Image (cartoon, rainbow, N blue to C red; front, side):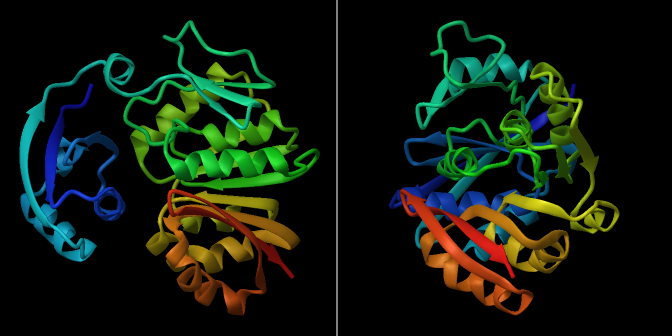
Amino acid sequence: MNNYMKVAFHLSPYDEMQTDILVATLADYGYECFEPTGDGTNAYIVEKDYDAEAVKKAIDESGVNASVTWNAEKIIGVNWNEEWEKNYFKPMSIAGRCVIHSTFHTDYPKLEYEIVIDPKMAFGTGHHETTSLMVEQILREDLRGKSVIDMGTGTGILAILASMCGASAVTGVEIDEDAYLNAIENVKLNDVGGNVTLVHGDASSLNGIAEADMLLANINRNIITTDIGRYAAALKSGGVMLLSGFYVEDIPVVMSAAASLGLEQALYNEKNRWTMLKLLKR
């Protein structure tokens, strides 16, 4: 069981959007889990990957419009399921059709789709706007008989839902080893292993995966704009790409990267300024 460093970030003045910007940057530096606080966020990273100088660099790169102070403390290996149950992860209903809960939950609604997630330190329980936006759009799509790639699968929640919605084959790609192992556990919990394949790797892994009818990527703007060429190449002509992990204001930046790749904007949805962007490949 890994030991972690808990880094508490305090923003003055506090602003939720500025905190989210900082969180997105910290995710690029290997921080795996974020716990909202009244004036910022607690961020967790495996102890061996912690670097105080990298924290300072991440704050500078984020460009947040606030004064940021921080302090770090070592967290001895703990049962993260218990921590999530006590502090954060509660059963969640999305669009009145999908309920997301963990093995330790007993009180939750019975809906069309029931996803069991034991998140540990992997991001993606449905509580963040980006995940719920992606879930809502997947529920609107017709995935029956379709092949799907889920980039940055995290807990595996979107890959699991795609399988439940009738996808013929789903491949989840995850660069973080702990998240990858967690996704394997969650796929087993939901008994969808028959058509869900998980790959430990980054966007270069797409070279060995057959072109898909749909590609999902709920990551962050910088990674998406860097890798969108690989995403487009992994998508069949006429295929659908669903992207999230960024703000409405970032859509022009994403579309600038997508424009030369035969990707056209079909629609977008938003929640608290976070957005889900649907693209079609010509």
